[in-house]
Amino acid sequence: MAYTFDFASVLEYSDALLAGTVKTLALTAVGTVFGLGIGILGAVSRAWKLSPFDRIFAVYVELIRNTPFLVQLFFIFFGLPALGLQLNEWQAAILAMVINLGAYSTEIIRSGIEATPRGQIEAAESLAMTRSQVFRHVVLPPALLKVWPSICSQVVIVMLGSSVCSQIAAEELTFAANFIQSRNFRAFETYFVVTAMYFLLAIAVRQAMVQAGQRLIARRKK
Amino acid sequence: MNDISTWDIVRNLLDGALWTIGLSLTAFVLGGIAGLALLFARIAKNPIPRRLAQGYIEVFQGTPLLMQLFMIFFGSSLLGLEISPWIAAALGLTLFTSAYLGEIWRGCVESVPKGQWEASASLALTHFEQMRHVILPQALRIAIAPTVGFSVQVVKGTAVTSIIGFVELTKTGSMLANATFQPFMVFGCVALGYFALCYPLSAYSRYLERNIHGSRAH
Image (tube, rainbow over all chains, first blue to last red; front, side):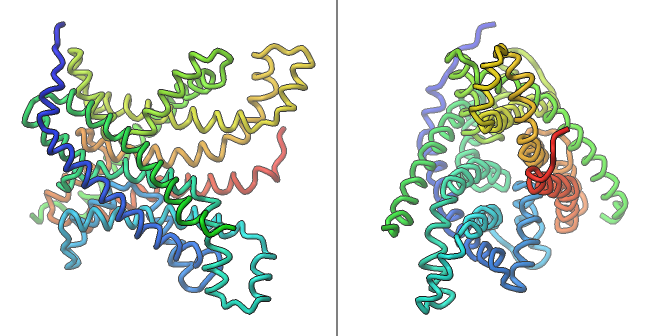
């Protein structure tokens, strides 16, 4: 069985690969920023039992964590127009990423907040800090720092999971792969190259997240 | 198209859900066996199997499941094997599952206190006897909660196999949504189906996690 590998026919499409990589990273970046925002709101609601938000977030977290990302994406893209909410493929992909990461980061950050020693909060309160000051300055930074490794892993998982966004024709890296192999008929080589690219992206995203954590959170620690 | 009733939709989705369950069980059982092999490679004294297992785990945890499935599907046809979507899906998910379970279980084995190894070594147990009688029984108890928790990821992972054409719950949903023009209802039902499968597993995993310290080994 003689099969000649032809990787050159994949690299001819380096423009499409690059454009797909940029879109995948952009999707991940937007998803991470807003997802972590939701996660912080959800975590404080859950950890400090802010009624009724704690209940709402509890239901949200369970619904999202117990259904596949692909189904969430299809529901948003194909299902929501029935309610009059027509989203294009990018809006749907971003919304799905944000909602998905929001649910996971709620649980991750909550465990960090719940690990805050009671005395820290009491000390802050005795300095006449308001509740939101206590949260912003005393509780949140160490909580984020504690769970940052889990957040990094989750962001990588979400980035890899974004490959299914190709199914609603969002033109990210996997979409580029599908496009290229439909042109050059070199499916194996194309997917091999793109898989390797994802592998490198996963390493790069993890590194970027670790760096971001050190810059943004650890800096505040004395 | 009004000739597809709600009951037809539900019945078809239930058929699809059976395939989702079948694929999940297959991947979980076979992935568990392969994961056990990975675990032993990962904690071996010889660095060669250790490195190989580590590389395997990093590749499967560092690439999208969808790409793994594509590689298997198109790679096997390159080897002259025409495999069905079912085989590709089962193989892909098994490899994916084994990488995660191997790593989870390694963490459990390593969390058994070092003194247990030393004590059993001082009783002149061989490496195998140490594993068999001292380390694994303790690691097993630690491992149950995260293993059940990971099974949720396996069930959700099966949804991705719809993309390579395996007809399970998600694929059935896509086809029904196209046929009935009721995507909101159909995908809502699909999501509920996954929730019904996954939520009990999540809840059970949390219950085990809470009770691991309170319970006693027999």
